[in-house]
Length: 134
Image (cartoon, rainbow, N blue to C red):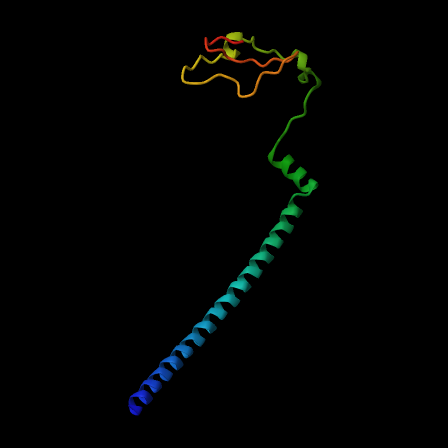
């Protein structure tokens, strides 16, 4: 009985030792990966900072003006090309095209107002059950 307990204890100690050994090397590998990822992140942040600085430098007004004059050959506007808003011709408006249709009466809907209508100068437009506007 004592021998069985000793053998089982030795096997258990060996298994735990091997497991801890494997775990320690796995943790070391993960720490190396973490260090490499942190280094990559810091390099990417530095690259983004440099790109933002270059973008700011390229967006200066004098650089934009020189690029616009080089790639966008714009002509000067003559005074006779400028018109006032009143001189712009507008197409005739067809009232039938822009009128708002009135919805038809839906027999499945209850058109009774939820709150009582206010009395006085202001009246809300509501539908009656006959489908006409009140």
